[in-house]
Amino acid sequence: MAAHYSKKQIPDQYSDKSPRDKDLWGVFKVMGEFVEGYERMTEIGPCVSIFGSARLGPDSPYYAQTVTLAEMLTEVGFGVITGGGPGLMEAGNKGAQQGRGKSVGLTIRLPFEEASNPYVDPAYHIDFNYFFARKVMFVKYAQGFVVFPGGFGTLDELFESLTLIQTGKIAPFPIVLMGTAFWQGLTEWLRETLLTIGTISSTDMGLFRLTDDPKEAVDHIICFYKDHKIAPNF
Image (cartoon, rainbow, N blue to C red; front, side):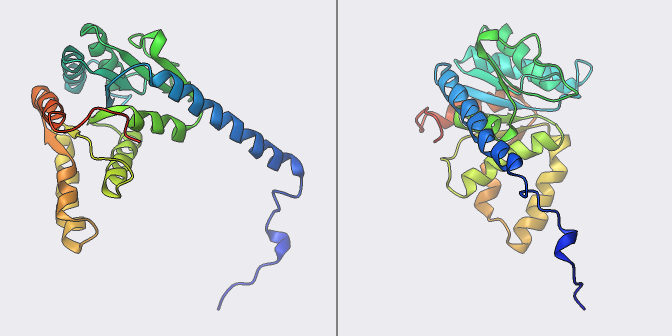
């Protein structure tokens, strides 16, 4: 039997006009983040977004690998975009600086993280309050994604990019998963579960490349742009 509830048990958050007004003013804050992001990112040029855990520091083998890959990307002409935080994001910006390339940090205001790592170029540091506005910048101005081991945020960025490509909302661009030991369980699950029951197609499994070799990752991105135009994704 269905439960019956009194309307009095459901709070009316709009009984006072002030919360609604606050939400409407929030629209202008969102617009401001998009305007600043678009204006500044268009001046930077072609970049590759690097994602990875904020919790994996210099003692992790992935840190040195991230530095190496980022440096290689800048040496062939790409800038590097990270979330601007510690861990593997810091490694990406450090590698970009070592390669004398553009080192971009799109930071998010969080109570438990510093504003930005010391390897972000101050000219290319943009601070965000809204995750969704920040995520747009990662995708719109990136010519590829390189995804190192990470947590929920890293997985969120990965699957959003795969969804946008799968649904045709953006044109395909190279996505590389770095670290076969870390990603293999996930990729096997995608193949053996999602593909088997038909919730994804075989072509979807070709939207990313899995490797342990930074050079292979960079070569994959370079090869892609032999046949595709470098431009913002939407």
